[in-house]
Length: 300
Image (tube, rainbow, N blue to C red; front, side):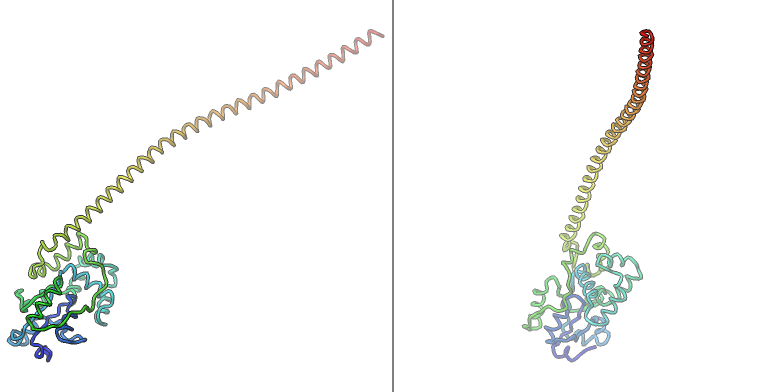
């Protein structure tokens, strides 16, 4: 548990995953390798409480909303070793994005597996005893990393600089939250919020942004609804116009049909008249011929 570098630097660093711990570890212990691991303060106490308290102990914590996003993307991107990758392949394979991951946490079995993994374990478990009393001498915050790391250096009488390491690629954590995700994470890490003074006022702007986001979505939905309603009314008006035009069309078609029938009757009548005239002309011709014959017979 206790290593030579603890004796060399007279300090114990409790490395909580996804709190810039790798950067801090490399600066304080002058190493390019992982030395500390993710051991809990209580683990050291149980091995040798007196020795633990004889050294200066410290840790860094992080806003749970931010840490959750960072841990998820870190593991989805392969993590730091094969163990991380295997965990992600087994438990995060069905979580295509952060939103689906948060929704999956509503399942108690899945939630239990996730919260038992080092990157998702509540931070207070790393630095507190069974009664949730903080065991370390100094707690810095990821949100004030540069300032709090400078304080740590002054306490240790050191002058190292801090470099970034193991940074996962993702957008600002606020981009991944809606009201549901906010409520889920807030409940999961309620002890972290309370013990490390991440109280409501620290996230009032965050909650406000979520409300504004919801309001914007609602406003957009109302706008879309109005547009749909206007389109419906417009289509309804067009429908009435089309119905009226169709009625006129049907009326005209009936009139045309009647006229065509009249024309057909007229044509039949016209044909009959022509035949009658022709018959009369033939009759007239016959009479003229008969008259001519009679006249000729008289002359002889």
